Amino acid sequence: MNYKVSCKDENIEITGLDCFNIAQIFDCGQTFRFSSDSHGDIRGIALDRELWLSQPSSDKLVIHNMTKEEYEKDWREYLAIDDDYTKFRSSICKASSDDPVITAAMKYGQGIRILHQQPWETLCSFIVSQNNNIPRIKTIIKRLCEKFGNKIEGTELYCFPTAESLANAGTEAIFSCGTGFRAKYITDAAEKVCSGQVDLDEVRKAETSEAAEMLCRIKGVGPKVAACSLLFGFGKNDAFPIDVWVKRVLAKYYDDSFTPVFFGEYAGLAQQYLFYYERYEGGQG
Image 1 (cartoon, rainbow, N blue to C red):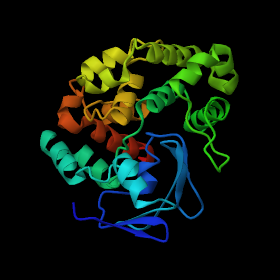
Image 2 (image 1 turned 45 degrees about the horizontal axis):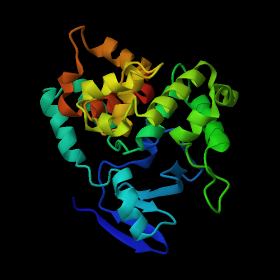
Image 3 (image 1 turned 90 degrees about the vertical axis):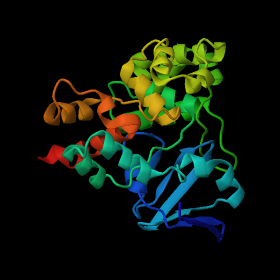
């Protein structure tokens, strides 16, 4: 890793980054509490605080209003700064024998990285995502945070609600946030996490297939929600969510014998490249 970190005017500046593009990272379907402004900056909430990012050039990242101590404690890991994407991408190419589809997708979405998000927030968010579109997912999550999350000191923003707060809220109150049929699933998830029936630490430690089985004990959590949760919230790089976009890619370019093993141990990252490529480029053909 050849990047350099400096602290200037209460901002963290990171130079020498490669394979890092905030527009792609926060628009590839992995998180729902961020948006871009008219300048291309990314603003949102994670780890119980506001995050403001800008990218003046392809190899420079600015994290606004942050100390070096905060960056080292939480955000260096959250933003996947130290993850070796040259290695990851090489592994995908080798496993797939330089498959032309994934090669094109990796080139198109070169700046994508998988964030290291909090397990409970990720699980709950992807339960909300079922049979839903991104604007509506964001609206529902915003309502849940405002109703059941703690206010972030000095702001009008809210933390993501804990499993305990949602378990105590009850299904009817959760339903009032526009969650629809998902309300009972959110309640079940919160109750099972609080009771230890689904232990998120054990999920993280387990092999991916076993971890998926653990999450599927929750009502309404099937293979896709489990895979999304594992990839984005539990560090399972081989988890391979299949949504409508990925289904389209697989049907268009691969035969019925395809399995995620084709992309090797970083199949989940390959999925992100394919998702982004089909959504913004491949789907135009």
